[in-house]
Image (tube, rainbow, N blue to C red):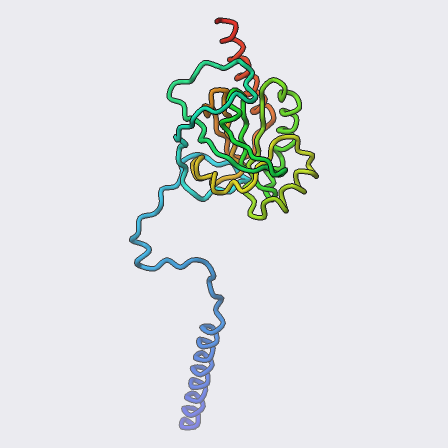
Length: 237
């Protein structure tokens, strides 16, 4: 009896060990594989890039460090000049000059519109926060366009005119929409978040930079402020 019992116990232990071994092999072969980035030992010792410390609102894309635009521009013609310029701001960053084609295949050069208040908006057709701002820009162009205010939308879309023009037509955009702005975006601090919008005064000075969608009151407030500054300076002369 004792001998038979020992044989049975040994057989049971052998069976249990075999089943456990098969379970381990099965688990190893069926474990989910992580598809994300894998940090190697070499990568861990590499210094991380310096990210922007600027707070980024939700609903936009932000991946790259910010660089302050500081490239000087040469004043262009007097097209659109209202004859009223605000006082020059000390230590301001001049808006880098550029030339792009718009959706109607016309050339647009920023410096040719010196003397106007310009809202320069970097956007794409697929960006929802960008779409939210468009009605506000349309309204500002309607209300202040004849007072020397200009909205300029710079598309960062990769499909360029084939995607942007039909979109602009559907949205009934009444302001300048420029194409192929990806290269030019580097002049404005390597644009890494959309929408990114610059308020440029009549002297070509960048007075404000917005990241993310902003309410109509923000843009309208700046337009009225810059127009008022120009009026006050004109009256004091």
